[in-house]
Image 1 (cartoon, one colour):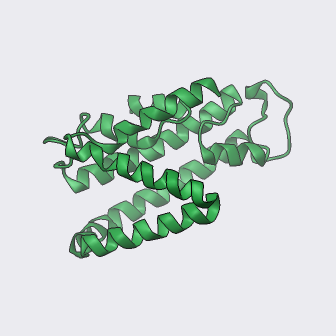
Image 2: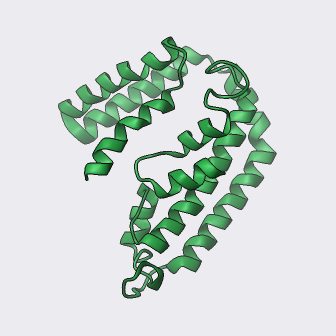
Image 3: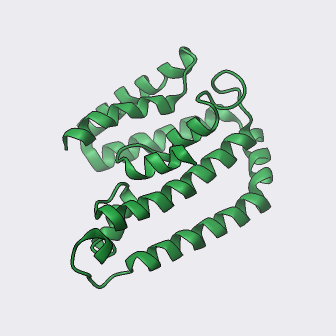
Length: 186
């Protein structure tokens, strides 16, 4: 939970970082990538929920959004409450934001308990290579569609960089550190 609290306040750091921290830095009990699928799903779900709570708290207390969702909430008027030191604006407010987080977390918990094991068994049976190629093709199309040729090129270079950590026995989430510089400067 401590890792989720930290990433909830730090911009540019994901809940995946908190999940890796919760799993001992390497994805479970063994070397990178050899941890339990169930443990990873549970740790990631918990980290996502805790990160959402702390991101909302950060928005309310600091008045600064720390994730894409809190940017959207702030634009809807939820980020300028009295706790943030600004004038109150019509919007969902802190209580509304926390209510939404609690409802979403409750629904996520119910779904995790009821369909989580079946989901993992279905995913394990899918042919991995065609699935990965389809997702990769969709991501390339989205990158080119939204950011043009340059965006597609940056995506391809990023994909190659993303292939390196498993080759050296590390987890991909450690690449998130590259965001800290631009976030600190921006």
